[in-house]
Each structure stands twice: as structure tokens, then as C-alpha cells.
Length: 203
Length: 203
DNA sequence: GTATGCTTACCTATCGTTCAGTAAGAAGCA
DNA sequence: TGCTTCTTACTGAACGATAGGTAAGCATAC
Image 1: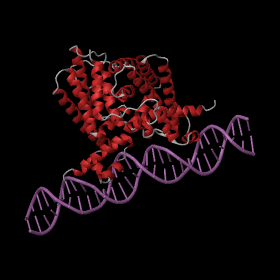
Image 2 (image 1 turned 135 degrees about the vertical axis):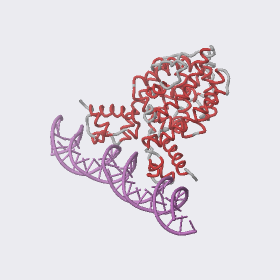
Image 3 (image 1 turned 45 degrees about the vertical axis):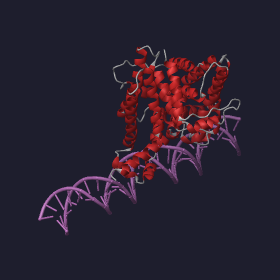
């Protein structure tokens, strides 16, 4: 099959970059998991950074497209904001490794993010900014700074997806004098988050 | 002065772990910045992991203490929740490198976090869980799952602190048809976040 | 003279990267 | 069809750099 090795490399790379981040991910391990040798990666990609960008950019584009489409098919600021949150959450849920890649990138303050990737990410983020500003203009929302609502949405969704293990570990240490609530699924989280965000931005 | 080199190592280590994460931070660089050589680090600490734990644990303990104290001096669920958010935000603001260390740890799903560190972190997190459950019992709050509110608070504060550069980069690409709101300061963010969270959890 | 607090020198492992070489197949020409 | 040539898609071996970690020795304080 054409490009099948290349696809395998991309898949393994996504997995390893999500697990270890750009620096700590090893090309040797990625090659081993793809069933090729290290130089085979260099045949398909210029270097480690190019491989990373291919992995990241593909998903950033898909995310921006899916979010834009979901928002367009909804009407009114409230519906659109809910559609945004649910589309974002669904995408992270579907593309398991993507949230962790973004989390690593954010924890490095975008050190490894190319300009093209940053541009693609801004498409997704400006979608929600537009919704919030539109809602504020129409008097439906009351927002002091849309950046805060944006941060609340994006960071909560990403962190929830990437901190499953540590959350369970930390929860096991919580003092026993109050019951521990079950860890929400991505679907539940998305719904509850949308409810909370909408409640918090309504005029 | 007694232990002055040790203190210098700890300070430089905190800076480098926050900038690069556990794996990517280099002991050689940490030693250079502390004005000592690499084996001097091994004189004071068993290995890289022990140095990291010393850096992390010290701040996790301080955070839990300060948050507990702030919450205790407030009365009623609403006041206490606000006190929690503001104390957390103030701590992150004061200890510049700590948010990034936590962000790296979370993006690795706590891979490098020792049990003692996880236990210390659970003190901070169970503080807010207690507030939320108490508020729900008293009928002041209406909460489906306190984990979600917790995630919203913690992830927003940490991400805000660690993503200054990438946020500015991404913002510069945002489509120009709506004005860009200024990036909020930590103080502003904390206040706005507290307002939003309170609004979203009120019964 | 002995413990403390380091330094110099060095070890091994692993990293990203490069280079020379090669099996397989398509393309060109008789 | 049969022979040559070029391209594609790799492999094996090795490179220099850098990582965490260690062994041994030296200066100072008590």
C-alpha cells in the first residue's frame, strides 16, 4: 500500500509525542513501533521537528474545521457557545493523543509550535472569541474579558483528558470525611462544563 | 553561610524544571547556574529525582498551608471558595516557576510525581472539594460533580500562568474583524475567575 | 586527623542526525 | 521481449554531542 509506512510513522509519532512531549520522545522508539528503522523516518521527514509539525498540524486543522462547522450549524450565541464546547470536547475524546500533545506544548509555552501551527490554533480560538464578543454585543452575554472564558473552556477540557492517572492517584489520598465523586467521562464533563460556562457568561 | 550552595542549587533547579520539565532539564545547566559543578548536586541530593522532589514538595506544602489558612479565615461557602481561588492564584503569582512545574507534571500525567508529592497536592485539592460539598449540603451551591469545578479553577489558573508567550503569539494571528481584549494580569484573572466560578456554582 | 563540601576527570548510554549502500520496480530504448 | 538506467524506499553502521552518574582526590574547619 502506498505511504503505509509513512502513516505508521505518523501514528506512532503521535502516540509518543503525546506520551513524552517533543524533546523526550525518542525517534528510535517511534521507528521501532512503526516497524521501520530510524533513517526511514528521515526519508519521509526532514527532521524530528518536521515530523512533529506534521503530527500537530494535521490535528489542529481538523480541529479548527470541525469546530467551525459545529458552530455554523448552531444559531444564537448560547447555542453556538454550547456547540463550540461540545465539538472541542468530542474532538479531544476522539483523538486521544491530541490533548496530551497540546498539554505538553502549553506547558512549554509553545516552544516547539511552528508559526503555521500557531496560526491554525488561532482559528479555533478566534471562533470562540467571535461567539463571546457577538453574544456580548447582543446583550446575551456579560463578559469582562473573553480571554478568561476561553482559558476556562480550553484548559479544563485539555487538562481533564490528560490527567486521568494523577487525578485518580490524588483522589485516593483525599481525606475520607466526605464522599469522593466519580471521575466524570468526557461526555459528562463536556455537558457539565457547557452548563457552567453558559451560566457564568449570561448577562 | 551554611547550606548556601544547597539553596542556590534548589533555586536554579526550580527555574530549570519549570522551564524544561523534569526530563529535559539538565543537571549540568543547573549546576552551572548555581555556581557549582555537577557532582556538588550529587553531594546534596541522591539523584535527579530527589532534587526534583525537594523542589516540588517544598512548594506543594507551602501551597497547601497557605490555601488552608486563607480558607479558614473566611466564613461561608461563597467567601471560602473565593478565598481559595484568590489564595491559589496569589501563590502561583508569587512563586513564578511553580505553575510551570505543575503544568509539566500534569501534561505527563504525574509521571514524575512521588507519592509524598501526590499526597501533598491532595491536601490542596481536598480543601476545595470540602468547600464545594459543604456549600452543596447547605443549599448555597448546586453542583453536579465537584471535580469539574475543581478542574476549571486549577487548570485555568495554571494554564494562564504558563502560556503567556504562546497566547500572545496566537492572539497576533486572530482575525482582525473583532478587537482583541488585553491579556489579563494574574490579579485580574483571579478576580474574574472567582466571579465566574461563583456564578456558575450558585444554586 | 578526621569529617565536610566540594572539584577534576571520566564512565556509559542514548540522543538526533548523516552517509553509504541496496533491493525492487518503473521507464526508456532496442 | 530483453537490457539498461533511474527513482523510490528503505537498512546498517557510525558520528558527535550530551545526558545522568561515579570514583578519587583535595582543601578547609574543627
